[in-house]
Image 1 (cartoon, helix red, strand yellow):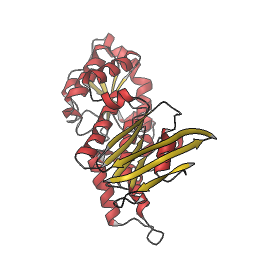
Image 2: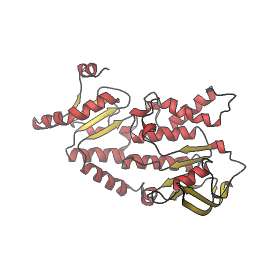
Image 3: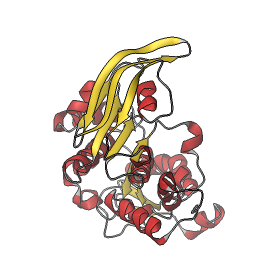
Image 4: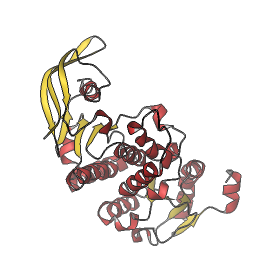
Length: 319
């Protein structure tokens, strides 16, 4: 069954024709990837499908089973969006606004339950009270995907969803999107400028190659530790071992705000030199500036093991 039918569409951008005479259907259960170089009109086409841009020519039809308010949209992030000062829960909850009328503008218990359900589904429960702008790129994309899911159970439109993510983050997000399509039955239309990443990101050697390239120029290794980190053996263990082999200073960031090593830490770090800190802007910046020289000094002394900062450091930073 066709959810969206596009017939002979032509769009312009800044007075230039960027999409010309395109026809296609998006059927229920599809996983459609629109691939093209930057500036080739991909985002313009997607905005047309959302009703945000009118075509110069052609028509867009919605199937009987789909309303325009039942489309979840994950746009490319701007700098302003990345610095949005709201909690994860508030950002996800705002996805329910798409279906509200002017007569019921307030959040209901049903809205809040839906937000909680999608936060759980996307694996971001342990950061639901964190500020959105303090999150990593991968975490922010998970939050925005959960937000988009609050608007739909039928169709997701994703505009370059893995831009700026590291190889592991890229693979994890692609895997989440695949599961939403195959296990939840959600139709996916995704934009990408890199067909190899879109098609090949789940390949183990492809991910490891990208990780090696990134670590070659890295001066520090940051590991975000959540309740499931120690069970992610395939790539996390390999990445930790690569960081140790390269002698990189290791900063372990506890998403549960613990100031020391706890039971969520992967066993790969047993006996290894690393600093453990809670998730937070100020302490993360402090560790980035101060741990590398400390790491160097400990190595010269032949010392190893898990380290943490004293309370005086946190008081100095305003905690």
